[in-house]
Image (cartoon, rainbow, N blue to C red; front, side, top):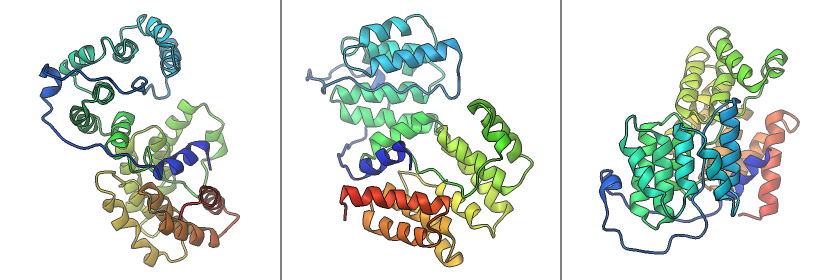
Length: 321
């Protein structure tokens, strides 16, 4: 299991709660906010640059890394100030925290076209300013404005802090061809997209899994659904389609599809494994452990069996019940 997956597992067991919803229009107009001390630290910056590797993208990632460190805001601001993209403007606004962050973000939020990037970070700035209800409204807007983006995924993390961060990603029981794995990340995704248009359900599953890793859950779910339609008797395709439906606002959508597959495919390791994975995401640890053990029993030495063992090992070390 990757370090990222282990972080998700630990985070699934933590709990803090935010609440309240107000009208989105107040975000750009409210001025009668009581003066309060902001939360400690700075709002995080999370720019989505996809697979870009151009000079600006590299510079913005450097600025983001500097900003997210303590006491590096001035150096980050100097980098963001060299560019005029929306990502740079958002970075520059956060780098001015706490003196002048919310106002420029509100201005950007009011300018067309609206997008998840600004809404997410406006929500973060509002939350760090202890304007929690307005922050929730901004995060809801980020989900609606760009549902097929990492910004919507990150907004959902803050709206549902009891659940693991991010979304559960489908783990195929097979790999892409070596000729594709040898390519650069950007070319891999292009090759997987091309294969998904011509090579059947497995190719669609692989492309959908890649889209999930890029933070594009809507597009990924579309690929998984197409794979399930093409191969309705394939437990992997059916499980992928169910996992792709996972939504933190309504986890039951995914479970209502995945749970019944246990009866349809009683010995399908992929069904048991992903049922355990989704249960971890909603912090149902005892049930998750049971499903992961059943998944491991179907083949301890398979890739999914080894993944199940890794999760179970982490659960054992954490000591959750």
